[in-house]
Amino acid sequence: MAEQKKLKVFIASNVGMDYFFFLGKTLAANGTEVEPIFLVKEQDYRFAAKNKGFKKIYLRIQMYVFYPLMLVCKAITSPKNSIFIVTSNTFFAPVLTKFFVSWRKIKVVHLLYDLYPDAIEIAGAIKQNGLLAKAIGKITKANFKYCNGTVYLGEFLKSHAETRWLKPNSSDVIHISTDLSLYDNTFPELSVDGKIIIHYGGQLGHLHDANSIIKCIKFLFESDLKNEFEFNFYLSGAQAQFLQDSLKDYPIKIIPAVNSSVWREDIKNYHIGLVTLLPGGATVCLPSKTYGMMAGGLAILAICPSWSDLGNLVLENNAGWIVNNSSYNSIDFNAANYLQQIKELKQIEKMQEDFYKTLKSIVENKEIIKQKRSNAFTCVREKYNSQILNNQWISCLNESNP
Image (cartoon, rainbow, N blue to C red):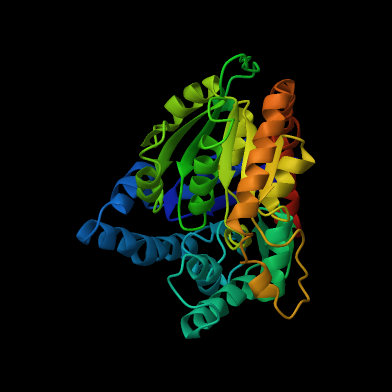
């Protein structure tokens, strides 16, 4: 342990998000010296991302030009034997860092928050397997090939990335989790005598299944369950306005996303947290907000593929319910149509039926809500706490190829 305290670890990401700072806190739990490197504050990112024109262009320049330059300058002046954990925000930053320190005894570990070009393919910005996708894919392969190691957020993400692109020199799966010190350690008791409150809090972007949420909620409000549930959304992201416009005629509370500290207090009043990923989105990321909801004592209702890391997180911990939005119950990585399988949505009528049946079962057995809320609250603290994550990270940093 004394030897580990001599580690100098730099963590780098273009935007200083909550989970990024929690990573630093996790690494420092055993005395490791940690220095964060980022350029844009989260609140500035949120503000600029909502704007158009120069402010948004300048944000991109900061993320893809100024931040990489700052990171490279820091890397080439860092002490020997330093370790850099460089996130995929910006996607080419890990291999760029490694290129400039390849002649020194410095490890660069690639932390894969989002997989590219998959993320922009799913968002519809570029054609799958088109020329641009293949060019970005070469950078992804270089991240895997030249960095000392890669860390994934889930087993499916690992399998997909290594099937489609390249198997890294060394790899680990470590949960992103959440900073439990920001949450009360007392389970929030909440009556279920009245309406069951379902809450969505956070980003609703191109990787999330906004359309299925809208269709399923409309179906529910036209059923015999319309008076059993209350929905509220704290929203930001590319599809926030689309959802708000689509549900404007329904009795649903929709407000902009609030400060994290306010959100942590508010969720004490809700029963179930709603999260979602498109099938294609499940090959790119894992919504970090899920851990925050679980830490706050919310059961999870996930509209996502049953084979996804999000689905596995909920089911393995008996922390909620899954409404499978994929046409497949499992994915065959060796199938000729593999890339088509992972994108294919289930028919919306079938999804609506599954959503209704799931919520009907909850109404008929309301006691299960408390059980799953308790499971969610407990498993984050027992399985994904900072000490367990610290042990996994230290093991990863020691095992990464020199």
